Length: 425
Image (cartoon, rainbow, N blue to C red):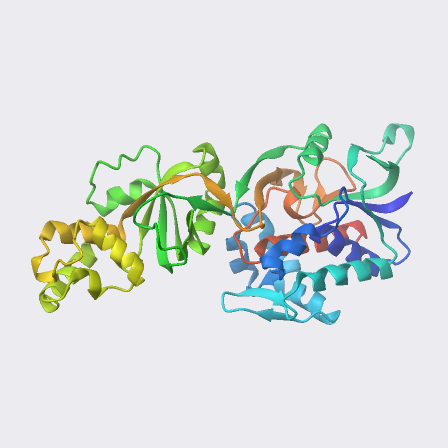
C-alpha cells in the first residue's frame, strides 16, 4: 500500500513527487510509468535543451499564453508562478538562463540535466519509480464497505493508495478510465503545429524569416471576391496573431504560425486542416497605407528596376517572389509600373492569401488540446470535484499553451498545488 500513487512519469509527476516527498519524508510514494523511459517530453523539449519555463513573472500576463485554461490558471499562478519554478531549480543547484525571446533553459543547454536531477531527487526521497507499469484500471474507494483506498491495476499487478495524482498528459487509455469514473473529457485535438502550403510565392526560399501578421479566414470566404473595406476584412477573419514567421520547405512555421495553431486548434480540426490564411508581411501597414508609399517610390526610384529595389522591410528573396506574383517582370523599372500592378503589389505585401492543406508536427514538441473538463477540477487544490483524493496535473486537464516554456509551467504549477493539496497544506 502507498500513501500516494502518481500515474505518469513525466514532468508534472516528478515535480509533484519531489514536493510531496520533501514535505513529508514518511509518506510512501510511487510513480507508475507505462514505458521504459521516464520524462520523455522533457528530453525532447527545446530541441533537447529543455525549455523549462518562460521569463514572464507576472501571473496576469503569464495566463494570456494559454488558449485553454487562461482564466482557471490565474489563481494558481499567483500561488506558484514561473519565478517560483526558477527558484525551485536554482535552490537545488540547477542554474537557468534567459534567451532573447524569454524562453528559459538550463545553462548546460541539455535536457539531461533536468532528467538527472529529477531521478536523483526522487531516489533520494525514496520515491518508487515503477517502469513498464501501464495502468489498466482505476477503482475508487468502496466507502460503503469501509475502504478508503484507491485500487490501481497495472499490467504488472494491483496497487492500493490513499490518494492518486493523474499526470499522464494526453494518454487516450487513461482518458477512457477517467471517463469511466464519471469525468468529462474534452476531445483531444492537435495544437502547436506548422502549416503545409504549396505556393510559388514561398517556394524556393526556405529559411526566410520575417515579422508578420497572420489571420485565419472563415471557410465561407471566396478568394475571387475583392473586398476593399477594412470592416469587411475584419468580419471574415476568425483569429489574428503576430510575430516572426518562418518559411519552410513544406510551408510556414515560426511563432506567428504556432500561436495561430494553438488558439485555433479546435477550429482547424473542424476544418480538417484545410483552410485559408491572410498574411500581412508589413504588420505596421495596411493596404491603403502602403499604396501611397509605393507611388512615392515609383517617383523617387523611377529609373531602377522594381525587382532589385527591395523598397520595403521584407527579406529580399520574399520581395522578389511577391513582385513576380504582382505581374511585374524582372526588368521592369519603377517608372513603367502601372497603377494596377502597384495595387496588386500592395495586396501581396499586406493581404497575401494562402491555402493551407495539412499540418506538420512542430519538431517533437507535440501538444494536445483537450482533457479533463476544467469545470470538474477545484483549482485551489487541483483535486477532482467528483471524487475526493483524486488529483490532476499537466496536460491531462484541458489546458494547453503556445510554445515558449508555457506548457511546462502549467505542469509545474499544477503539480505543486496538487502536492500541497495531497499533503493537506
